[in-house]
Structures are given as C-alpha cells and as structure tokens.
Image (cartoon, rainbow, N blue to C red; front, side):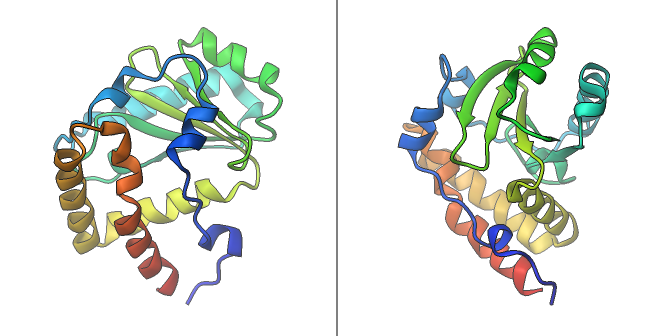
Length: 196
C-alpha cells in the first residue's frame, strides 16, 4: 500500500459560500447548466494546444501543467470543459503570471487563498478551466491520482460516469450544486485509491 501525506489523503470539501466568497467578477455562464457529453478525442488535442500556449506565455514560471478532470480520461463522459492544473512557485504573486494569461484571453474567476492558494481562470471560449496552484499544493497530486485511477479502473470510471449523468439530471434546477453533489462518489473512489 502506497503511503500518501495527510494533506493529500484529507480532501477539502468547499461550500457554496466559500465559492461565492472567492468569486471574482461574474460567474461563468457554464455554471448555469450542466451538460454531460460522451468522451471526445478532441479534448486531448485542446489540452495539447493550451499547454503549448501556456508554455510560450509563462516559460520558466511553470513547474507543471497537467490535463486533469474527466476530459483527461479516455472513455469518460464529461462536461466539455478542459480542466488544467498549472503549478507555479507562488500563486499570491499574481502580477507575475496574470497579465500573461489575460493576454491569452483568460479571466480570473476564483481567488481562493484558503484552498492552498488556488486561483481559477477561464478561457475566453469558456472551454478551459485553468487551475493555478502553488508548488507543494496537495490538490494537483490528488487530481493526478484520481485521473490515473479512472484511466486504469473501468468499473470506477463507469460508476463515476453514471453518477455524473444522474446528478446532472437531479441538479438541473440548481446546477451550482452539481460539483458538491459528486463528493460522496469521489470520496468513495479516493478511499479505494488510498487503500490500493
């Protein structure tokens, strides 16, 4: 059994109030509804193009860029929004990276210093959620573990897909509840990951 640091094993469950407190400007229009689509190979190509533009814009500031979330798992149904973890040294130093990202068309949507310094930016087309984390944050580690597990465990991939479809229907009248509603199944899958 692999040993993981406690801050990786202990998952943070945010609240709607915390999200609202971290909101910068208007919420993305993609938060207004949840649409789950069948896996699309174009998602991997979109990530590759975004990674290239990030590397060009930020260069040596980048510690890591990873395609995470459901669009990073072949065969998994997902919202057609690419989640990317960008790790840099310090997210609090926004003047060092925000202007370059804004020139690429991203806008800052969330500033959450209480959640390991997380910042989230959204692409102009609203098809990329760019999550910026400081070096050493546990969340990108968790994201990679979850992605890799779903890639190699088809039963959990199917469980997660079925849960997402059901919750998209169940939260249709309150779409902002969708992400929090997934916590139970996500925690169940993490329990298997950390026990393996």
